[in-house]
Length: 448
Image (cartoon, rainbow, N blue to C red):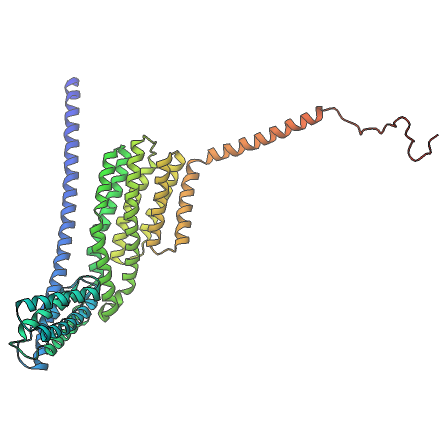
């Protein structure tokens, strides 16, 4: 019976381990599903707000154009309003001025060439080509100005023969549409800047935190391929960082122009400062992933404190995102950052080689960047990280330092005693006596 129990216990333990692994995977998928659902809900909320803004702006622009200029085909006013709303967040004010500039440029070029060349298919193509060339020379790049200049040139060259006096209505309609679009997004229905930032920052925070955890796992398991895969994933962060910069620009526009969102300024600036340093952390994380892979390939020693420091830094990134979103003081984030610096100091004191040494240095630099993201000045952040890393080093090697000091004192005292002993054994030399040379008179007495 004892043998039967011994044979059954490994089978039960294997099944238990499999069940635990399945439970962990299930919880992970459930968490990922909930995060994905939340992200989709936030995205649908933003889309709904933009759609309502566009519909309201189009209706108001059309109504105002009809009230001011009478009933008619006021197409350009709602079109300009929708174009302003649909432009990238953070570029709406610039987009409005580009719309107006493009309309004016298209009218001028279209009228001059139409009076010189007449109307017709090839004249239309030539007018549009000249309008776009001039718009590109003025703007230096593509955009709303170029599109509006080309579109207005087409309208002027094709509709002027059938519809007279199209220039001024086109200008005024564009002006009404642009102004109404700005009023809607700034005064009537301004978006929540913190939600915009959080929606754009979520994938950046998640990617950096996940990959820092992957670097920790790669170091712990000495898996160079895993570190290289982490490097490849971090290289794909550029698109998310670009969208994050656009969101920062849009949120800045809202908290600057919308009175209803002025109370969000402090929280926005704190969040924006943190995101700037998180972006730097994403860049240095790629360097750390490459160095981690190289250190593993060279077979360098990896103290347990080194992957633990990366894990703490990953937790700090996640915690900072939560505290920034809730508008709380980042006390927990700062504690995790200092723990990471302490562990980096302990790893260095345990003994690392060239690439491990650079990894500990990069960890301290990353910890300093995150401390600055929580509101510290650069000098204070560097001091705090340096102090934490030094405390970690002393916690591992205090006895070594004391032994070195005792050995130095013992060597110094032994050398001193040896020199004194040699000096005591050396025969004493008297002062040399002055001997009188033959034929030389003695001290001042006359020679005899």
